[in-house]
Image 1 (spheres, helix red, strand yellow):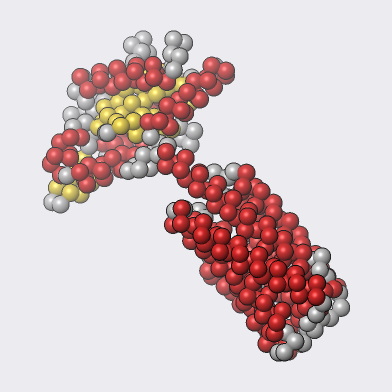
Image 2 (tube, rainbow, N blue to C red; image 1 turned 90 degrees about the vertical axis):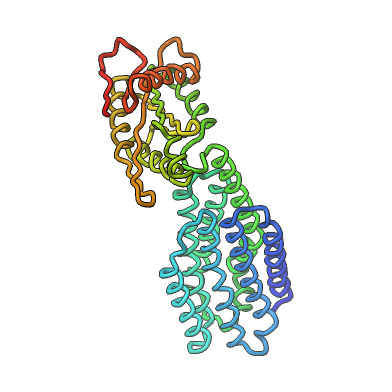
Length: 397
């Protein structure tokens, strides 16, 4: 083994161990899923570092055993890398796919190192495992992650570059001469072997930490804009989206309508059945609203038992039809409360944006006026703010 190869292997192990320690020290500030992801990534780094140290100091004494331990332990890091990326957004780990792939790679390692005495077979097996799992990671980062930011794209393209190095390594293993020692392989193909390893060690952990930080910031933004009970947007997010829609309608001259919903006699539900049942009513109402609306619509909890729905590109007449469907959906809510059944109705007010509305607040005020009219007229009905639109209110006892 050349001194250069020995130095690079040890340096890579030190970098991997150091980044693992840094990731573990950094994970205390993050939510559970991101802490688990950082721990998995650190564990994967430790496995790769352990494999490097085993092959560096043991191959000359017990070559076959050192090769099997090195490739088997370092190869185990690849599933952990994959699980780390999946853990960031609490995605399923797909154990039934990952572990059989690792098992096949391990079989290749055993055949290559102990039967054929050709370490190239074992290295090729791990390269193929890496190519498959890191390709899945790159696909997730670039296409499937919610709220993707710059760190997602940067890490995704870094994975693609790493995959390209692995493909180059696999090509050399298939077309090149037979290898009997891992260190010999590193010495002869440092551009692919050690280059790929050093790239992953030095850059991978930094990319991953940036990705976790980006995910953490996304979660903070989501929490700031989400009602914790119902999972709907909160009033702050509603006002932001409303302002954006008003700018859009002023540019493209498209209609915008707002529906205000207030649950009838909700205090009676809380007083009679308790706040737990009241919370369940609010959740069911949120679910009913989401199930009735389009993807471009926005439903928010405006406060207490009041909900607001923003309908872009929707004129008043169409919004009244939507409001009536919402009223009926809410009236169908039926919740078991001990020996009783809890049902609820809602009063709704609808208003369409007009030229004098310069902000979402003015549109909300007019929708509220229509809502109060529904309350005054007997509740469980839909009213609109513009009297000249011919659309009768709907009421039931």
